[in-house]
Image (tube, rainbow, N blue to C red; front, top):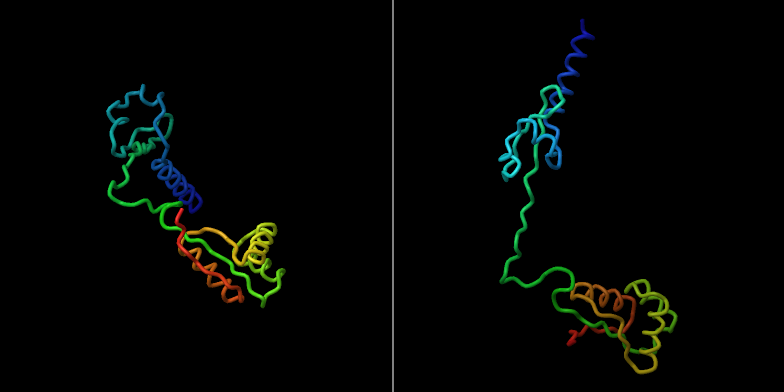
Length: 158
């Protein structure tokens, strides 16, 4: 008795889950079996009788709309906004190896770029570490200054 009720409950649950199954789009074979063609072009979600099932239904997703971006706003995605140069200045306090290691760990430069920047600062007095968005440049400036390097952040004029 209890086993039959449990089985009946599971079957009803399975049928109710199947009744609300979602398919990404209607198939052409469903349209030829008495379905109204207007429902397929409608922007609202409609329940369509599912063929070959136990009285289930399929929900058809409406077509996606393309929204135009606002015309008067500035681009705020990647690449938009002001960029800043991070400059490294030569100092007699830190070793060349230490400066290169800090540039690799704090600024994300690879070994070759870090060595090249350090040598540029050593030979000419100033080297370009990189060009970043303001927040990233501020973060690298703070980290390098905390590590004892002479760095400065300046707006990129290019």
